[in-house]
Length: 154
Image 1 (cartoon, one colour):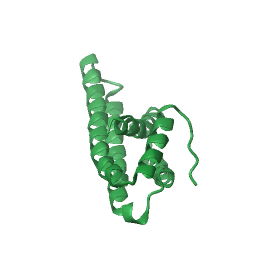
Image 2 (tube, one colour):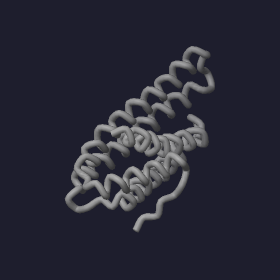
Image 3 (cartoon, helix red, strand yellow):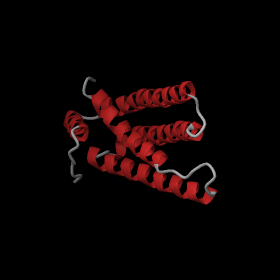
Image 4 (tube, helix red, strand yellow):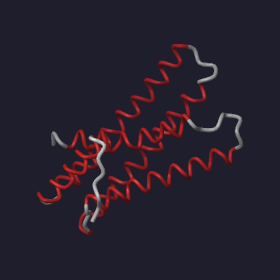
């Protein structure tokens, strides 16, 4: 279980960092809605790519699919919630007071922390059901993610 926490933090961090970069590069509140929708679609593609990549690297078996589906849906939900918190913060950026800015940042960080807990719960169920060799693979995948190394899927 000790190894799961860094794994999940790394996984959410990747999604969170991407969401934050999308927010930093997002259109202004007055930009056309099609621009925002295009960015949302791009972000959804990126989240799905991350889910597919992780599925392959973890070598999810057909027997594990139902548990994996819970993990994947949690990742999707977390990305949407974090995007929403970032968008809310961005909408305040041009006119926020220092206190409003701090509070919106706190809300964003809290959303991230809550997301990690949700992902930890979903992933723990899958991890506990994995055979030892697959757990070891998961440990390696996530350890290498936290260290910025790539793991090739086979």
